[in-house]
Length: 349
Ligand SMILES: NC(=O)c1ccc[n+]([C@@H]2O[C@H](COP(=O)([O-])OP(=O)(O)OC[C@H]3O[C@@H](n4cnc5c(N)ncnc54)[C@H](O)[C@@H]3O)[C@@H](O)[C@H]2O)c1
Image (cartoon, rainbow, N blue to C red; front, side, top):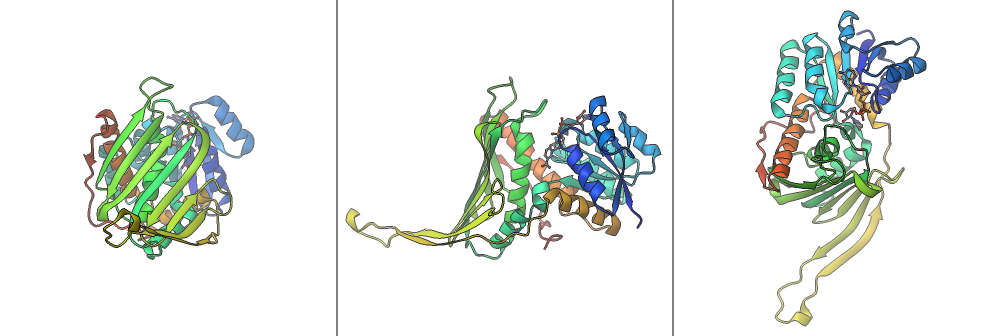
């Protein structure tokens, strides 16, 4: 296949990162960029004078483009992605794929019927630290997984028409699905809106997975410190993945606790604690967005299903939808129905 001609829709904060990566990958050519804001188009034109810029992405349909990348705010993902698929373009949609499962299912159906690639920008699935953590868990080094604790907090960035759940939790949910290789059975969520009326800026999610694995996710736009940390505690070892760390992103702690044998007296009650070595695995780190863009192009060329395909996007949306329902119902536990035939390890072994 010749170079894949790409058009990027949405050139705000994230879109230019996608443009840069597709420009730098030899197998693609970014032909055009669209944004409603003239100043963003002027910025893109100044950086890439050869690129066509337009305020109406539908101009792409007359340009013989192969693929569209949708980096607009999530409320417009569905309508723009659908329009592009219906004009026979392969589509990469930023996270979350859509704001409801029905819309995600419709995109999947259209892409399938037309033989097009539909992929969602779950960037952390292309983060080598996440893949190393997934392999550590799958290889049994941590033993039986007890629980996972995830924190994604910072001051901002507040979004319009979107709460913190739909903005930040897609990252942690996609990471959890990827590293645990399975979907949650249920979710409960609590949150509060402090700055913008009706828009939750902090939320706490509790997810239950098969085999009694518990996961807790804390997401916040209202925190003094930038935290991007996932702790996985198993029966043999514990691992901490800190995405803010520039180099040593994962630490595996050979630590654990064993319950005491039966004792009659309080004096004899002694848990035994193990304090062993801390191992920092070497991670060959490549910009995750670069790998994501390359993977999208490879999938278009080969016809293989992407790691973060439409169905994976749908699964994340399903969890978010149930979490949103729980958030509105004061933290009620909501069940999550998942298909059985799914495994996350198909593509990136
Ligand atoms: N994968 C990641 O790590 C990551 C990081 C940040 C943002 N994102 C995602 O990227 C998307 C964009 O986020 P952002 O922070 O760049 O938002 P943003 O508000 O900074 O930029 C969005 C841009 O889209 C433009 N836009 C809106 N409607 C449009 C339309 N119909 N046609 C053309 N342009 C339109 C806006 O003018 C704006 O410039 C979101 O889906 C977000 O979740 C992903």
